[in-house]
Image (cartoon, rainbow, N blue to C red; front, side, top):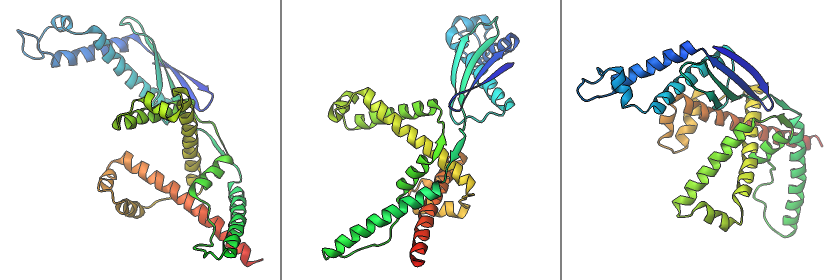
Amino acid sequence: MHINVEKQPKSTIKLTITVPNEVVKKTYEQVLDKLIKDTEVQGFRKGMAPKEKVLEKTDINKLYGEVINELLQANYVQAIKEHQIAPVSNPRVEIKEFHLDKDFEFTAVVPVRPEVKVGDYRKALKEAHDKKDEEDKKLNADRLAKGETLADTHTHLTPNEVVGIINENSEVEIPDMLVEDETERMMARLVDQAGSIGLSLDQYLKAQNKTAEQLRSDYSKISEVSIRSEFVLGHLVQENKMEVTEEELEETVKASGNPDALEQLKNPVEKWYIKSALEKNKLINSLIEEVAHENEQGHEHE
């Protein structure tokens, strides 16, 4: 197998993989052998029919499709292992041609984790908190002047405000593929939700006074912000060595009241997603408390 690796913009890598013809033929024979074992032909015991008889009743395009899938999966996995590439999503694969008597060549465009550069986000958070604190003081003074009681005089940034400020102070190039895939998922989810209440996509768009292009553009912007936040917060979780213990993980899952949540922890992938989300929440909450504490100490020294 020959592999050509080409770095592309926005955290993507293009692999051009050429599989020798002898491997193509060997894979074809393996797929055909399995097909023969699973095929019933009248007059023969299952799995004992001659190859020619099985091929007569087989859709050749479907057979070739299975061979191609085998070649793609085996050689793509081998290529990313050899070159130590860690994809963050599925690749975009393009096949030039398939012929039993030729080498098999395909390309795979792979999104990888982007480099994250974070500026002085703590200073920006402190400035935002101080500004909000001044606004709250003015608002509370107005309420007191009107004879209103104050429920809480402590100022805190919200999680959304923290994430927004961190994003504003970060540089990261998001792979277009990730944004496009997430946008498609959001569109599909909308179609399902609209369908569940008896609305078609056209009816929904008409009610919102939007075109499909406008909605897709809106979703694309939302997707980009969401993916950007994931990478930036993930970077800061590592940088700040933010960890969630097994005990914290179980306690949080139990407190959620979701009876299926504990079962999800048995799945390594589900567990990783839950733990990752908790680590990000822990980071955000610690930053909220940190800037609030600094603000209170500043007042004490005034």
